[in-house]
Amino acid sequence: MAAKLVELVREAAARARLVARGYPSGCSAEALPWAVIKRFDDDVRGHVERDPRIEDGRDQVLIAAVNLAEAAPGDEADGPERERLVKAINDLEWVTLSRGIVNRAAAASGYGEAGDRLRDAG
Image (tube, rainbow, N blue to C red):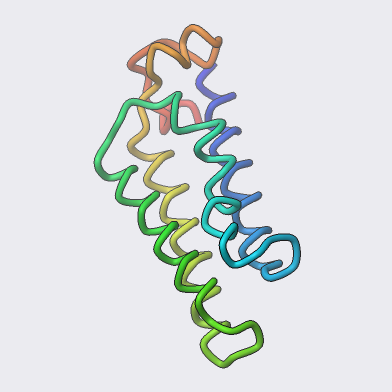
């Protein structure tokens, strides 16, 4: 049943990409980093074992979101910063799916057996 957790990872990444591509519509510069990472934090982060690679990927998403928020919308820096954010989101999705391990909280919620690898469920 880790397939449900895999789907949550994919949904969180898809939502983050929508926020990134739609910015500045929908949220302020101050809210952008948290809006991008919200679904990952709410639906995924507490259901996979802590892994430094996943945490680093999350940090990279936050850094890229701050950089986009600091670029003026429509400024020539806006496009590359947006693409860097989308790449960071893609990288976080990949590392979570390839390295993520179902934890006990996820198992208790019916998302698989504790210790299952997400890559085996996808």
